[in-house]
Length: 104
Image (cartoon, rainbow, N blue to C red; front, side, top):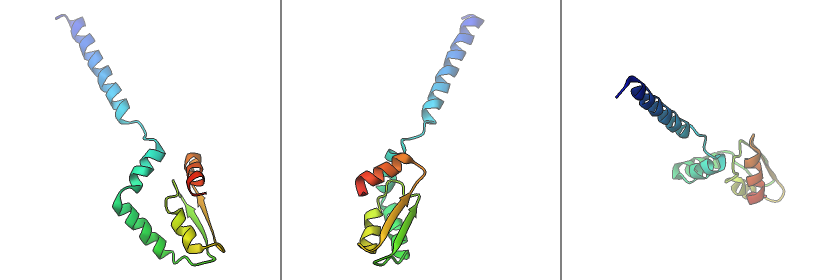
């Protein structure tokens, strides 16, 4: 094996390592990530505790900042009733669109 052959092999190994690193660093699709996150039982328990701590009643107005996919919007809406309102705010247009489509 010559020096040039060794260098070519080392360079191709480095290129393969770089490709693997790029794959590992890819950002997940936010909607897929949050669906997985919401499926964790402990997260659901925490969200229920937060909802309870808000002491929402009929006629209240709720703003969920960072609402994500809006999984708790129905619980908020049920608490505030038809005389209250629930609004979600998120920096991601995809999240808002998903929330609006699924929880209207």
